[in-house]
Amino acid sequence: MTSPGTAPAPPSKGGRWIQHWDPENETFWNETGEKVARRNLFFSVLSEHIGFSIWTLWSVLVLFMGPEYGLTPADKFMLTSMVTLVGAVVRVPYTFAVAIFGGRNWTIISAGLLLVPTVAAFVVMEPGTSFSTFLLVGLLAGIGGGNFASSMTNINAFFPLRKKGWALGLNAGGGNIGVPVIQLAALAIIGASGGPRVLLGIYIPLILVAAVLAALFMDNIENVKNDTGAAKDAARDPHTWIMSFLYIGTFGSFIGYSFAFGQVLTNQFGRTPLEAAYVTFIGPLLGSLIRPLGGWMADKYGGAKITLWNYVGMGAATAVLISASMEKSLALFTVAFVVLFVLTGIGNGSTFKMIPGIFQNKALAKGLKGEAAAAHGRRLSGASMGLIGAVGALGGVGINLAFRQSFLSYGSGTGAFVAFLAFYAVCFVVTWAVYLRRTAPRVPVTTATSEAKPQLSYAKV
Image (cartoon, rainbow, N blue to C red; front, side, top):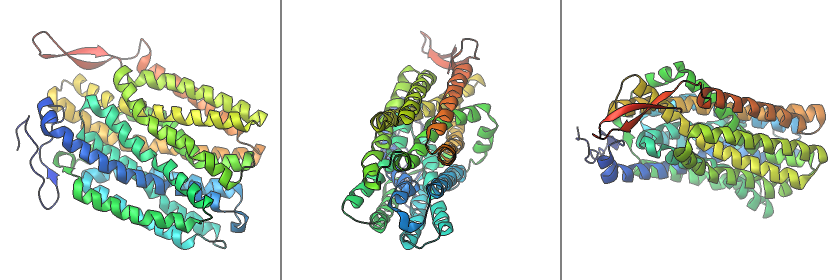
């Protein structure tokens, strides 16, 4: 075992396993830990990025699918809803996978699995294919959504608490940006009169590259392996489910709108697929790029405060969308939708920063100190992230189903936006009541005395 403050043991030739990892130790972190953590972060982002692209593949494929495919707008919303649902559900086993296989090993496997839905879509993407076949192949694409959960759980273990907001925001933001990238690729292909098979053919070799690079440059952390019980412990904690609810409002909105934006523009405002494609990538792109800023702001000012006021902004943007939808103002509608995307990105970063802080503080409340408290916090926060990510992604299912019903009932998305506005108001109340109101339970954080010995003080999450 390597002593604290020194470099981690060299990875073994057979599997790149790190035996000792202590990111909270500043000497360890500055000498060797940060370099290793950043390298793993970079290649984790690459794999997760492609996973997001494959997951949201059908948000652009449905724009290619004109009248000759025989699908109604309701069929397309149902298809994207089910793809989102699978992406949410598989996040739970993907969270366990890091503890079973190791972060590096599972990144290789999960990247390779992306070939299945991509090749399947390449085979069936032509007019005359039945809706049930498209639905089945679309469900396969949902596995791309699982990469987020395993990636976040893995990267959470590499970084110290003081860096988690930035690191998790960068990891998730780099993954989220896979949504606008595939939409931009589709725009280029549509503009060049290409077809969906050209788009799919581009991604097949990229998947192989991501798997190979993960094998060459990523590491497993030994003490993260064989701790599947952490997910059970996290599931018993009420904060896991409170944060899951809040994440529905942020990430659920991001992924749901990413799937639905183009369809809303084509069905409600009569945009052609090419006209819609020129716009749809902007919101997901800005929402992805801003996510690390949301994590940084949470590091600096507190995750709960940023999350609270972010919900105020999301509610205001949604109110503008309702007005623009009723007035049939495409320009105002587009601007407000892009602003809403940006706010989802900030909220994604701030909510995920809250998670490790909550479990670190609970470890201190139990009397744990130093590395013991940090290890306990990493263990439960890493496990909870997968569960929170899974439940949060279900918000994307709800958004697409809400749009489907709104278009069936009213011929527009206005009814769905009213429902979203009410939900954001509830999220605001929950954030304030649980984490910010003056009578809320306080949780401990460490401070230093004049003798430089750690003591417990109390502050809100």
